Image 1 (cartoon, one colour):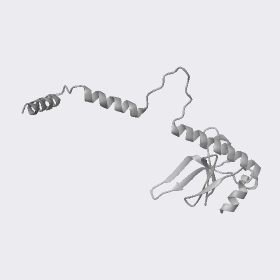
Image 2 (image 1 turned 180 degrees about the vertical axis):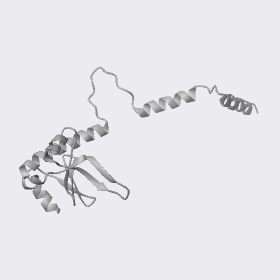
Image 3 (image 1 turned 120 degrees about the vertical axis):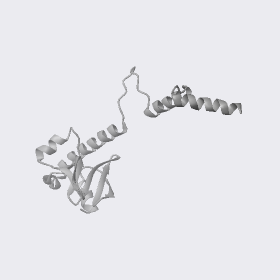
Image 4 (image 1 turned 90 degrees about the vertical axis):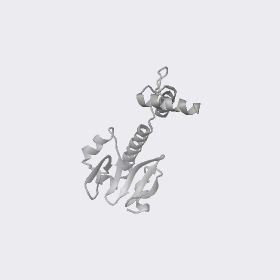
Length: 158
């Protein structure tokens, strides 16, 4: 698939940008990569909300072969063949794919809706730093720690 064909195919959808990717292009809109155009065809981003529609069309998950195994990527599905000839319906499917990509990006970044009045957990980095500083302040009660502390005291006296 060449660039002009893809821009033509997505003309009803709206502006897209293409980026070289693997054996084809990554397709981006609204700041998210929502599809791929590879030798195998066009592959859209899916999630639990959109997968049933692809299942009803018999669209298979994206997969590729490595030296050792076949990897199945369930978060991307092949575009049904009939949509290549129907830019209007392809545009509707593309909008759903953009929505799936945005939901996946939100999940990945950990963006959650905050409930007013509910305490939030501290960030993992803050917890780690707090534990480290607590360890530094607390005296070491193990036998090794006591011997080390005694050595430090005797070294100071010298």
